[in-house]
Length: 241
Image 1 (cartoon, rainbow, N blue to C red):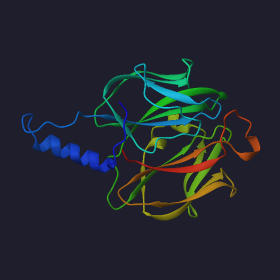
Image 2 (image 1 turned 90 degrees about the vertical axis):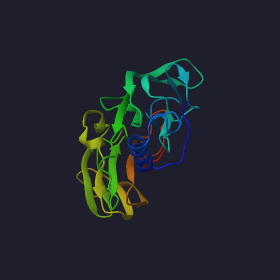
Image 3 (image 1 turned 30 degrees about the vertical axis):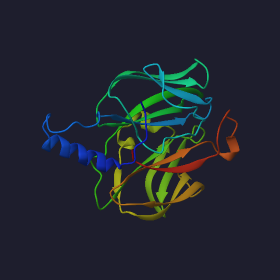
Image 4 (image 1 turned 45 degrees about the vertical axis):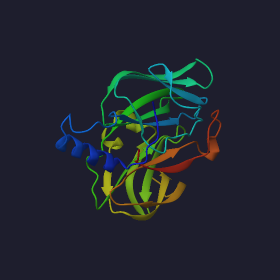
């Protein structure tokens, strides 16, 4: 069952290493090992959705733009994940049955297909925190706005991720990986690619030893005609469980 526990990602990985290296099976009894999921409903054209795992409903209704603020623990193994229209049995999108390993972290994203913004897809991303360093902050940038084809991300005045296409993480493993930067208090901006035109911005404290997903979601004010869509915004998610 998905539930919320308040530990940092790094803490979970460290604890796992300690338990593996220091305990025999007969030493203690400890909680069942989990796999960790972060659910994101980023399909602006889709209705409110509920998430089913192996045909069991695991979430309340999630409106477009809803994202988990944490990785939720559930039993590892062969899992089939479905998004269904809230309060119905109508399927929006499904992930095929796939193995989810213990003590691994996955983002499950419902999004609009870049080739057809009315079509909806779901993808699984395995999130790798092995490169997180104690004296740096780790970031990745996601353009999940279906009506803005290409954006560039900057931290203060420094361009850090250029020409990011809508949902380009679906087919590019590098773009969904975390990169290290100096920690600090920053203004984060999403600009129309190739211009200095700011689409949206936000401020955030990007702390050392943590991983953050910088997420562009919603639709622009000029083309906000997708059903159920929310306004364009930047969301900063710190990886925690």
